[in-house]
Length: 186
Image: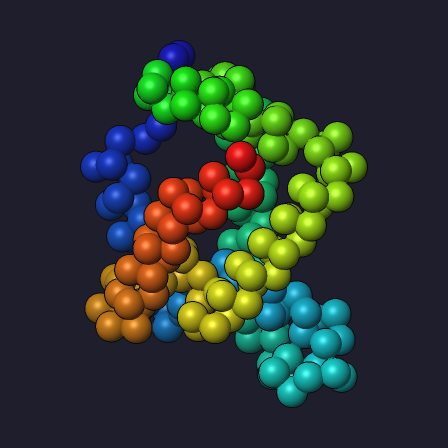
């Protein structure tokens, strides 16, 4: 029964993602998570305040099932199909411990030193989360979609803007982890 706790191999997960993308393309749909934020804001009445949210959200409500599936699937996977540990390089774990005080590296997916609920009482951490959330939301909207939409859907449709966006996501991630993260958490 140990196989149930292991990540799926690329040759299983990849074709399943490709099949899903083919079915969505065949149905004339686009995949992405950030578009659901627009749908939820529109449902909540944001169209009264901005023309951006004035559209037929009912035509996109199918995509809300993607969000529900991601939340429910993530919960099921984390609670019942995972041992909640992650294997990382010993040198990386040592560096995280020495440089940032993250001693739970390799013991939890989300280090409690960063993600525990008591961290939300720290105004610095709360400010970082709020500012980061706004930046991610703005960036996803400015790029015309999020990482999943561009990397999975856009690239599978051979869209040049998605390729440019994905390259930008990788560059941004490298800058964040090698430049900004050490400045913020040192």
